[in-house]
Length: 185
Image (tube, rainbow, N blue to C red):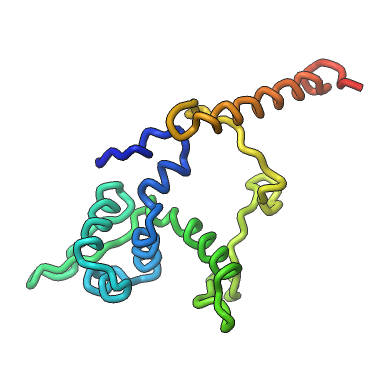
């Protein structure tokens, strides 16, 4: 696999955008997940140079996001399919789409709609808490350090900030009745 400067940053956003951060990669994944899977169709749909498309597809295959499958022997032709890892990018694309629809849709409205096949209705993506179902926002969440977090390139300021939040959280927890101590009055 190709190593890049962001590959070693202790941040999942940095690592993900290292692969997925350019517009062509996002649009390639949009097309593949929507059913445009052949190289020529991707090149035509996106208006992307064949060289750039080949490089992006190669990286997506190398990273295990797409697989290349032969669909014709003579002449040899291949198409691309999302792996489970690639399919998990769909909610990311939906979130980008929703944001783009909200802030950049033209006067005619959004260029595409999402229909949930289970209920047959048009819908929008919602990022919600896995425990209570409440929508997640900047105002009702905080980031804390994870087990793989550390301070280093890309997290020199963020790492200590998250660690301080965890320390404040631990201090608060020590003062609660659940910790076996009386709550501070």
